[in-house]
Length: 114
Image 1 (cartoon, rainbow, N blue to C red):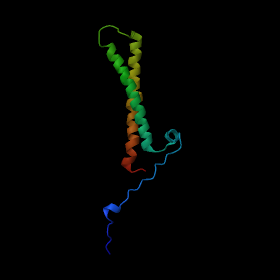
Image 2 (cartoon, rainbow, N blue to C red):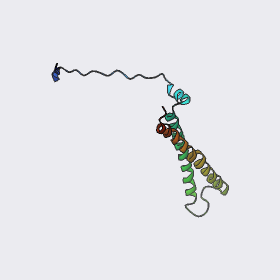
Image 3 (spheres, rainbow, N blue to C red):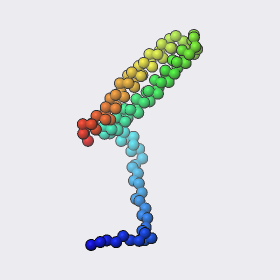
Image 4 (cartoon, rainbow, N blue to C red):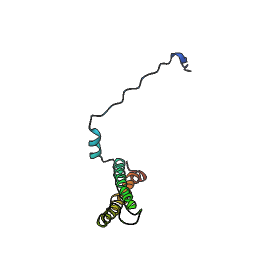
């Protein structure tokens, strides 16, 4: 049995169903209560990227201070505090958590976890 296709002029375009929108405020609740490893890994990476930007801004202040001899806009004590905070932010708030965030994002996919 052979089915014949209708002529092209008789085809009608159909509208897709409208997208369903969740209730307002659903995203924040979803982010706080999620157990999805991919979403948790993405949240780790986003937070680490924010700390990377803060640490980079501190590095720019350090390089600005070192651009010319002498003190430009920071005292010795402020420079030492900025240098210490830069190291703390970059090591403890960026470098360490980004590894765990990336592992949380990728490792369950590699071992076949749902």
